[in-house]
Image (cartoon, rainbow, N blue to C red):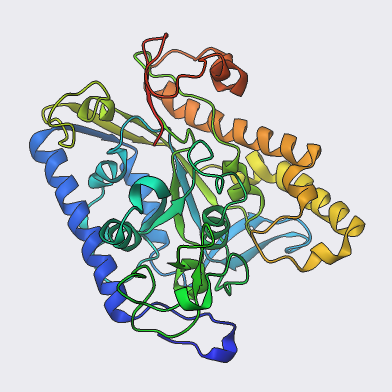
Amino acid sequence: MSGDRDSGATGECPSLPWRAMSSATIFGVAALCRSFLYTLSRPEVNGLESFLELLDSRSDPFQPYQRVRMYDAPQNGRGDLITRDKEEYTDRGRTSSMDDPIMWGFLPLRYNFGFSNWNRRWGFGSHDICFQGRPLSLFFTMGQVLPTHRLAHSPYGGVAQPAVTQAIRLLSKGPFPVNAHNARPERQHWSLQNVCVDPFSDLPMAYTTNGEDSHLAPSAFSCNSYAWVHIFPEGKIHQAPNKTMRYFKWGVARLILETNECPDVVPMWIEGFDQVMHESREFPRFLPRPGQDVSVTFGQKVDTDAVFGDMRRRWRDLKAKAESKAPETRDLPVGVLSDELLNGKEAVELRKEVTKRVRDLVLDVRRSRGLPDEDPKEGLVETWIQEGPKREGKMDDESWVRDI
């Protein structure tokens, strides 16, 4: 690993053995999923060519490319032809526990081969499911999954949790020292009880999600700058017969508003995965069902200046106002918010607006599949509160829900 103790505990990339284990995990899972899709399912993919072109244009973030892009002060202060690396953000509602990774079986295997990781997606996984026990924790860490707490199951959940901080930094220009949510000193180094940190490094680069666990911080490495982060904004499985979506979680907005530069956004729509792993399935529940029609539709890359530029300007104004009231908050690290920016009414309302706009982008891709428009109330939190206290199983509207 490159870097030294005077560099603020950052590095160029994790050790070669760590990267080799991660590459083998991702490639192995991708190969299995691609085999399942193209031998045991009836796959359909739309818009893949443009998505692969986007991935190819990101092939080496250390080789800048030229692109006309408007930036507002304070970044550039003018529109210009500039050099810039790319970050990428893809999103889609979740329909089964196997959406990710099966959906990435549609990508040619070459995109999951080798030690370079800037074109491999980062995702979120439930801490109480994916990170229970050392074998599972190591597997999902190698698969580039960020441990995420759900408020229904943990007091450490919410929009300000460490996984969101890591995602914001992954979408930005790094590396970032682990200067927030630091793991305890005794949890900074590998042991048989502490397997989610690099055993071939003694640099303190681990963060904690709950004060007890320890995970290698991917944003501490420059090779993970401008990463690709994929999310399922509904935050739970939702299998509806009319293919509607639930409301999106507001943490989505933080990835748009707080990154150094607005990430490239690619909305997606998937169908048929609910039949591969339907919530009503019986024994053996852990096996995906073959012979299903499955499809992935990649939307076009969003003009983020046109769609989110005004909101990012409003966020900068809010941030400047909050910092003028509390100058001590100016030194907060990237991805860490003051109480005013986390809970203040204007900030909360802005996050709601951004989240709705992201959801509308996904609805555009849904509409391109010939599906009728949703009832606008489907995107409101208040609509789903009326479900009552039942969290999982078959709902009154014939949909199936699982909190995962």
